[in-house]
Length: 257
Image 1: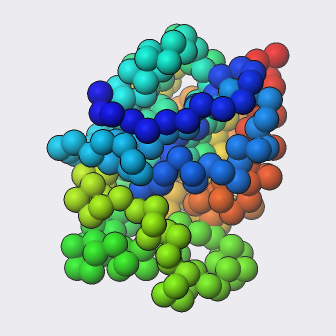
Image 2: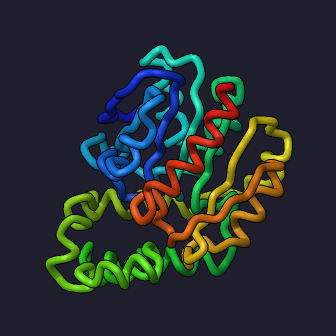
């Protein structure tokens, strides 16, 4: 297990918030106050934020084992998982490895498989990282990550100084490579997910051009899960925290009823 920076807050049923790729635990700040009836665990995955960045690649299996080890150290015998993007993939992998540890899954803007189109998108980030470092990778990723409504409402992100907060969150470039190569190692999980009986909610952004609706539909079909749209791009908890939290709360209330 990598050494992980984590934070536990709140009281109530236990919920784990799983970051998207490159994010720190602070990325959940807009959502945490809206989930006040739950004990929330959030953490920097290996290679992200202030957690350890060992040799890579950082595969979904490695991330999932980190999560299971962290839950064991905390004495959490069960929890619901809420995962964004790569965090959703980690949640799926952890649930496949230890299904009895989890009450339910909320999977947002994520995918159970990679096809040529999705590989090409993510590989463009790798090429940009190698060609121009983190600033160019962020520039290339910007229209993939945020929806049109959000970008139009925040034109400062298109200016050099507007990238400052995103630059501050980004891991070092070696860790970014390891994270991307790990993501690209994802196998098709759909055949395995059909045997998973956990309750699940699949959320997708109506403006998500990185993982558009067909990926969410495939995931919901494999899990037998409910599918719900959000008025966002890929970074749903940042773009519309209230809508995201409302969907999550509705699901968690059912799971913990």
